[in-house]
Each structure stands twice: as C-alpha cells, then as structure tokens.
Amino acid sequence: MGLLPPVRHGAVRERRPDHVIRIALLPGDGIGPEVLQEARRVLEAASAAGLLDASFETFPHSADHYLRTGETLGEEAFARLRDEYSAILLGAVGDARVADGVHARDILLGLRFGLDLFVNLRPVCLRAPDLTPLRLREHETIDLMIVRENTEGFYTGSGGSLRPGTPQEVAISESLATRYGVERVVRAAFDLARRTGRHRVTLGDKANAVPHVYGLWRRTFREVAEEYPDLEAETRYVDALALELVRHPDQFDVIVTENLLGDILSDLGAGIVGGLGLAPSANLDLRGKGLYEPVHGSAPDLVGTGAANPMAAILSAAMLARENGAPLAAERIEAAVDRALASGVRTPDLGGRKTTEDVGRWIAREVAGGA
Ligand code: NAD
Ligand code: IPM
Ligand code: MN
Image 1 (spheres, rainbow, N blue to C red):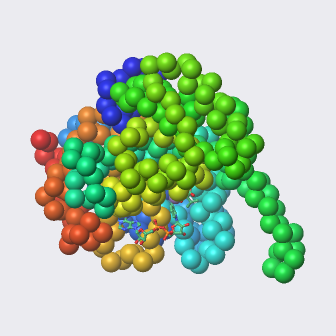
Image 2: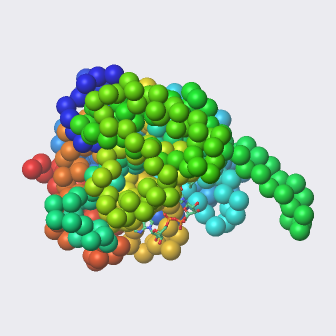
Image 3: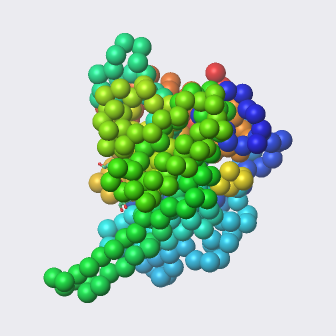
C-alpha cells in the first residue's frame, strides 16, 4: 500500500496513472435516483474540468425492477458489477411495497458480502459550525472516521425462526465474528489512522455483556494495536462511547467497530454534524473495488418534493474519486460542498430553501469553474 500525502480522509489506495474510472450507477429506490443524478452531475463536472476521467452505466435494480421482473440483483448483474467496474455508486434501497426488504438486502448486503467489501468508512465531519446541534467548546471541532466492519456480525443472516406468527414463536439471529474478519478490519483502521495523520484508534464494543464475540474483538484489537506503537489505542463500551460522542466528540479520531454497532453509531455521527443529508460512505475491499453510498436510506417522506439533500451522495462521489486515484477531484468537490454550505445553498433539512437539483447544479458549477 502506498504512502499518500496526509489527507485527513486520505485514500486507501495508491495513486494510479490516468485512467478511466468505470462507474456503475445503482440509483435504487425513493430519493436514491434524485440524489444520484446530482452526484453524477458533479462527477461529470469534475471530468469536464480534467480532474478525472469517468464512464457511467446505470443499473435498474430497485424495488420497481423487483416487482416487475422478480429479480433482486441477479447473477449476471452481480458478475458484471464484480468484473467490469472499479466503483459502484448507489443511491438508496428500501421500499414499503417490498415489506420484507428482500431486494434491498440482496442488492446492498449482496454487494457488500459478495464483493467482500469488508471496510465501511463513514466519516463524521463538521463542515460548517452551525450544523451541529451540540454546544461545542471554543475551537472544538468534529472530524472523525468510523470504520465499520461490513461482512460479519448480525448481518450474515445466521439464525432462524420456529413457529413464526404464533404465540409460541422463537427467533434466533446470531452474531458472527471471525478472527480473520476482525483482524483485517482492525488493521485497516490502524493503517488508515497512520496514513491520514490521525493519532488515536478507539474500539467500540460490548465485551462486558456479550463476551464471546466482543471478547474476540477486544483481544484482537489489543494484539494488533501492539504493531502500531506510534498510535494511541483504547477500548470503550459502546454505550458509553455513544454518550461521549455527544458530549465531547473531539476526543475521537478513528472508531473501529462491529457491523451493527457501526450502523447505529454512524447515524448518531451524522446527527451531530448536520444529519443524514450530509453523511457519505465507502465500502471497500482494499484491493481496488468500492461501493460508495450516502449513509441515508430512501427517505420515502421526501420523494418527489425536491427536498432531498444531495450532499451525502455528492460527498460519496468525492470518496469514490479519492479512492480511484483522483484526489484533486475529491478535494475540489468537498471544497465546493463547503462553499455551498457557507453560502446558504442548502436544502430544507439544513434550514435552506434550495432544491436537490439547485444544490447539485451549484456544486457542479463550482467544481467545473475551479477555485
Ligand atoms: P432514511 O435514512 O431513509 O430516513 C431517515 C430520516 O432522514 C427521514 O426523516 C428522512 O427524511 C431523512 N433523510 C434521509 N436522507 C435525507 C436526505 N438526503 N436529505 C434530507 N433528509 C434526509 O431512513 P429510514 O426512514 O429508516 O428508512 C427508509 C428506507 O430506507 C427503509 O426501507 C430502509 O431500510 C432503507 N434504508 C436504506 C439504506 C441504504 O440504502 N443504504 C440506508 C438506510 C435505510
Ligand atoms: C446502512 C443501512 C443498511 C445497513 C440497511 C439498509 C441494510 O442502514 O447502510 O446504514 O444496516 O447497513
Ligand atoms: Mn444505517
């Protein structure tokens, strides 16, 4: 792995020579298509400005597609996403018409598991001071990275039901941790800290109440930490960690945690920096493949209103650019988002009156125009 300049959310991969980034777009459901259109617009603006070279193909997989064809993701699409693209940009999946959420699980978890995207990076970054609902101390800021394990825990589907729908129903969902799976994501968190000039890595677990799985996490974390004597390593119980995230978020730098705990902590993280409309993510295998998506879901309450904030999707596109050898494009996009926030170019979730498209066009113009 290459040594990159110290960018705070620095790329996990070495910078590569100029090449076309083949991007698969998966707009999905609800506001997914609305926000993804703006992310694409911004990437196209970065392309036009010569900051990257990208090609796009849109995949139709969504609730509509499932209800029409019975196909969730399908082997052929999966194989193409695996073999023909280095990056997938996803809007959101989830639709009340598919009550059990089977298509969403097959698409999203199918890709995370099927492509072995074991690192889920979820930055929590305060991009404008007024966006936090917290009362921060003077000079206190929020800039941390949640590294969520993405292929184990409660998400493997292990378990089952007996006598479903009866008063005697029994349900079991098992959380699974492997030494291999924990070690590789913990190591990824320490590597990321080192590469991006961060000093402290915190493990969030629940080893006091769930000793088997989180005991393995804790032991592995401590062993791996010894390989990084230059970094501070600490373990916290996740309930207390959640409290401290709200009280003094600036004490955290990198938080590494198990799948479900990371899911919950990352929505909390979004909540302290302006909400889900601003929270991006990258699901990575660290070998060159990535699935980029906003942390938010399909927000059925906002569909068609123009109120969906496209910034989470646009910031996910910036992460895509950074991981695919275009760090300047990433910086330009992030700076344009910051200028939009500072200039009041905001959707209603951030107290503004702009539409999804207004915000996307404004940011795309800034990216195209330089500065
Ligand atoms: P959600 O993230 O869709 O919405 C939660 C709240 O945040 C809502 O009030 C919504 O209006 C708001 N919100 C979300 N995105 C926003 C944006 N871009 N701009 C402004 N406000 C935004 O979560 P939910 O309501 O729990 O779930 C809705 C559906 O989405 C469900 O089917 C769920 O399973 C699915 N989901 C999918 C993903 C994903 O695709 N990665 C993530 C979370 C939830
Ligand atoms: C997320 C989502 C997904 C998750 C759901 C939709 C399966 O909440 O990406 O945060 O739990 O991982
Ligand atoms: Mn979530």
